Image 1 (cartoon, rainbow, N blue to C red):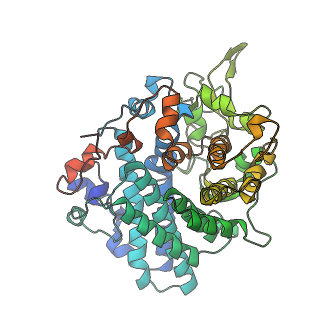
Image 2: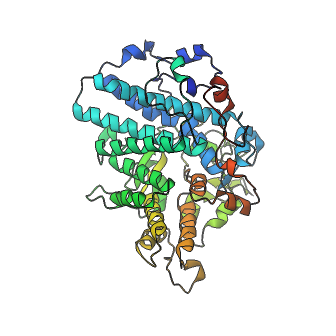
Image 3: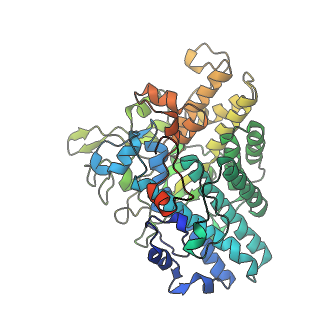
Length: 488
């Protein structure tokens, strides 16, 4: 896994029970303390790249986010406790504040946020091209917004650190800020990022955050906050982007997942990975292959059994939906025997070595924009066969499915009112965006999590819509960090 140690950790990002020695040892880059390092444009490029590198941490897109956003939901499950007790607890809603997976997520997000803050604190003093400086600021503000968005949706009220912290003592001043204040900062960062970022990159810069990525994430934030008009307006800007480089649905759903076709026209933002024994590869091929499958599915390195699709997920696809077999398999052949353990196929590659494959992780893509825009329109008022239907049906047509309409002789294709359209969007998002870290957050955002999990025999309480604050973080700073209700 990528580990570009160009950051200084903060007290709130540590899982070391207040051990200042560990804090101090996280500061160096090639034995040069960060206080003396950031002098040139080249230094600043390394710092910005390190902020991107934080997305690869185990507590971010390497593993934690699919565990808190997919395994938690009705999409996937853990079949073998040997996969890891911490993720099993998340699957069955028994996790408590001592869960080390959640502590790792907290740590790795705040380490990434620290790197973003270092860039923003130091870049004004660097003599460099003004346009490039502005772009770097936009990039790290997008990254900071993305990290805070994932954290606030997971934990609720969290510390909001916007400056570079140079000592552990400074970190102890930060307590939990309200969800509203965190979102206020996320929106401000994305608005500034949008104004500073280019529409497109070329060459080695492909994969960096664009203005379209900032607009899309901002639209998702507005949707999460039920600001329907603002969400619709911002997402429409992405849809209406003109020119030869505008976003589009790829004709073939399977082309979205080919490692030879990353950062394509439907992609808006991906976490970049590259196999080859350099610490830049992705683990998803091995993580999602069934436990006990050896190298039958993963080819190189054993299958680890994370994120196994549920039977309900398999049943959620309509007949003839082209996406089903491109997203998941029903099992694998072990010699002449079929082993009926499902697994995700979106992230298959032949790794260079175990946990070292080429698959990027798609964070934002155009189909998500179309479905979010349709949802925002519907929440402002149902219009029979209006623009929201057009957005929904663009996605369905690509999947080989018939259109849904306000009046239809086929009951399963009739969407007669606003409530029915909400469920149609929920269903389409589930199968279109399956295994992409949307499902749990979608259910919470639409106030459907408790009801949907109950349909699957899992009774949860409202407090479980958030995860507990890791106990180690409370132990580090008990005067400022408090526990979420229900977990005390």
